[in-house]
Image 1: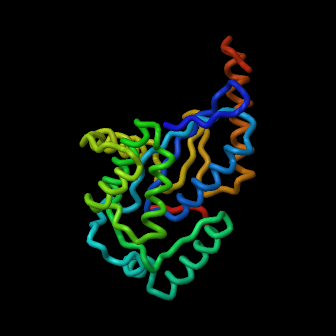
Image 2 (image 1 turned 180 degrees about the vertical axis):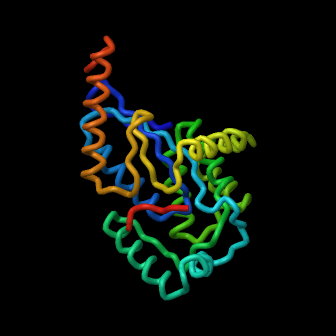
Length: 229
């Protein structure tokens, strides 16, 4: 988990359910980072796993070929990816769908789990997004992930598989079928890669609601943008 410090003592916890093979998740993470910078408060971000294609096989097959089978052919996919790439560019992100390869992201999520435990979860998520969408790396390949772990300064202890499976099951139990999904304080959900202004408004509203709830309980008060299975 990565604490992002602000100026107020009350901390708003956000759990982000996402997949490193989800383009709108990459955009959503970038927008949340901007929202946190604009928010006048403290935020704790926790990264949660989700797999859009849990049965995918990492064999360096071009992503566009897989998308064409899934979404009705190359022409349709070209329109979709162009629109997504345009949206990404507006947030300062560059997508190269021509280089991207289909991958099973389970081990990538395990790397994020390890990195998060070491306080480098945000860095790991961003690095994996970049590897997948910009560099054409197979984020399901053990050798590739080992190199990325070393780059991040994360030691692969072999742990995390059981924990990632449990968190994937938690996502299913919560009824999550598409990502990104932002869960504020475990109870207020915002789905899709929402605009920065929407996320800032959500942070302010959640902080206000939790402050009121804390005071009442006697505590201290002080079409797009979404990837579905």
